[in-house]
Structures are given as structure tokens and as C-alpha cells.
Image (cartoon, rainbow over all chains, first blue to last red; front, side):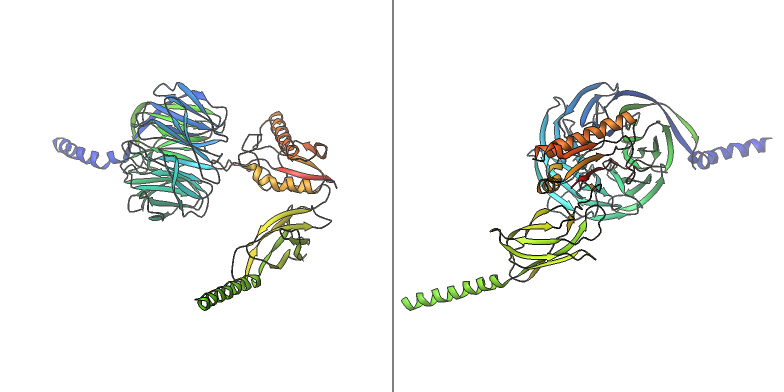
Length: 332
Length: 235
């Protein structure tokens, strides 16, 4: 009896070493519709302070909402075509939007006034991203004209055009350390560019996706790059080496948007398969899945992932709020 | 001094006349393929080049087998009016500019010609509408200009604007969208000088049978938009 008890006690640490790593933290969320656009919501972006989020739509408008309550604050009008994407500046004072009217527009967040219209793309603007430094002096945009353009925000002028993709470019992201830009394209590649104003050639081209790459995003520590494609696959790349770290068969339909939490390992994805999923990027495990009932175009989350904002094809804007975290057996 | 000046002037005139001579003798050719706008099959038409003085400077007839044509003897750095003519096709006129060059050069230019056959459906070069919208999208005037020109140059032709819906909604919604699109396009053509009585409209509550919407939604900005056609009704 004593021998058995001793054996059991000695095995307890072993249990935690061997069994516990296979258990994943599962999160549950409640869902609430906070408002609507008149048409499909294509973009969502939460500001740096987690106090506001913005949405953009096929209805040609942008809406600004408050967090955590999801109250609609104002509607920005001015674009002449559907608004495809948004980005808050690093200091949360400005908002950039890209539209099928081929323009990028800069807005003052507090007043809602349009500060500037940036013209230069020759086709629909699909992706926009502010440099994430405090001044957010630069803005990057991508377009179906296959280019990536960099803009001087203060002066409202085009600084340079990066040409390298052979097909339409779908999205762009700055690294948080300010050193790199990543762009993704229907040519199934991701190109990494230097933010050096004199550099016009890609530093590297990441290949591995077997379908159009629809979105890219750097982790907040700039050590990883996330990409998602038309077939519902997410890839994780180590930066700055560009080495593929992980492939996740995430959704059964295209993924138009992903977002990363400040822990640099919690990634959320939204898909036209009508679901939102959350992943632990360090293990590749799924830690949340929620069926929304309508196609999800866009996702973003607050820093600690306690709230997820989604934009849906039915025009609804919804908040997913974390209810609890449980430990369940993980793995596939 | 006079001798030096004379020598300089002589040499200069020789130099410039040589360049001019070289320029005069430089020939540019324009070649390409002529295809039918409705089915991209080769078309045999007359292609005639006119210079800025409206003088005919070159012509060709495109090959019925492969649509190939070649017009040569053009000058570099010039802008030509090109008339495309055949009784079976819309008469059309385009502008072609030749490059500035000091040696023989070939310029490639393809043409899409619109058959003059009653009932034929001619797709617009680029869809002029955004998803779920009936107003003309930004920049659409540019690519509709070619259609406007074709209508203005062929005043006896009557057409019908035929529009199909985007991803299928209710029949009422589809008819509303396609009717508004037809009316928007008709208003545009009328504003550009095409007589209103030459244009009729046919909205549709059903999907385009030739180019139906796909089963799945496409990615952002690439969604299926219902086709709009110009259908020849009377020649």
C-alpha cells in the first residue's frame, strides 16, 4: 500500500510534464450584434488604445464605434465606391481607408473630417496600413493594379511604388519595428520589402501558398508573419528569416482577415465558411470556434483578445466577448 | 573667317539634312489582329490610316483566317486616325500614335470589331457597375467612350441595353437593380449625344444564362457582377 502510494506520488510530476502539455486552453465567447451597415462589412480595425474600432463597407461608408460597448459614434462619407480596408494610425488620431474608387483617404478620427485624398492607384485599392510608429508618417496601400504604394501622410504625396507582384495585390502590413512591409497577392506569394525610402526591390519572396494570398499581418514583436489564403489555409513565417514555421488548415473557405493579440501567439481568423476561429500559434491548436451564421469578411481584436470585432456579409457588426477559459484536451 | 563660317554652315546643313533624310526614310509599320467583339473569332475588315491632314497614307484588309493585318509606310512620331470599315461591322475610328524612332519599327495594335447582326450580344469591355450598385463606377467613362463612339458613328443602328443581376437576390430586387443599371447606362449614352429613341432597355430578374454567377463567393473586390450587354436590334 505504501509502495503504491509512493509510486503514485512520484508519478504526479510526470503527469503534469507529459499530459498537461496536450491540454489546450479553450475559450468561449458570447456574441452580440451592435449595429449594421447598409451592405456587407468588408473591414474592421481596432485602435491602439482599444477604445475605438472602425468598420468599412460596400455601402461606401466608414463607421466609428466605441469600445467596449460597441456604440456607433459617427459615419464617414466621401468615398465613391465600396470601402475595402481600414487602418488606424499608431497614435489613433487618423484613419486611412482604401476603396474601389481607386483612392486612399485619410480621416481625422475625432471630427470625422476627411484630411486628404491620395490618388495614384489605377485600380481598386484593397489594402491600407499605417506605419505603426507614433507619428505614422507613412501609409502603405495595395491595389488590383498589382502595386504597393507608399505615401507621405503629412504632405499627402506618393513616395514610391513597389512593383514585383505579377497579379493583383490583396493586402499589406507594416512590421511593428518599422523595418519591413509585407504584401500578398493572387500570384500566391508574399513579398517582403524594406521601409528604406531608397529600396524598391523586394528583400525576399515567400512561397508556399497554393492559392491567392488574401491577407498578411506581422506579430506585435515583429518576429512572425501570418498569412491566409483563398483555400482557408493560415501560414506562420519566422521573421526576418522568412522560414515557414507552421501551416494550419484553418477553414473550409477563404480567409479574408486575421488578427493577432498582444501575446503574439493568439491569432483569430474569420472566413466565408461562416465561422470565426482562434488559434494558439505556438502549437497550431484551435482554442475557439464560433459559427456566426453568415460569411465573415473581417476580424480584429482588442490587445488581450477578450473582445473580438467582426464584420459580416449581412451588414452586421458584432462583438464577441470572452465569457470564460477552460482547459480541455487539445490536439486533432 | 568667312571660309570657316561657310564650312561650319555647310557641315551643319549636311548633318541636319542627313538626319532629316534618315528620318524621312524611317518607316513604321502597325500590325496586329482583328477579332470579333462577341466571340473573339478573326474578322476580315478594311483598316485605313489617315494622317493629321486627313490624307490616306496606308491601308490593309485583315485576314479572314487569323485576323492578321499589316499597314506599313507610316512615319515615326505621328498620330494617325484609323478607320475600320466593313458592311458587316460597326464602322469605328481609333487613334494610333507611332513611336519616335530613327530606325524601322513595328507597333502592335489589336482591334475588336462589333458585328452588325441583329440580336448579337456585345459585352461592354469592363463592367461599369460595382457590386449591388446602379451608378456608374469611378473611371467607367473612359472605357465606355469606345462604345459611345461606335454608336455615334453608326447612327442607323438601334440597340438594346440588357442587364443581369449580381448574386441572386429576390426577383423584385433583381429587376430593380438591373432596371436602374439599364437606365443609368442609357442616360449616359444619351448625354453623350446618342439619340434616346435608338436605345431600349431590357432588365432581367434571372441570372445571365451565358455567364451565370459562381456557386461560391469570391474574395473581397472580386465578387461576381452581373453582365451588361449592348444588343443590336436594328441595322
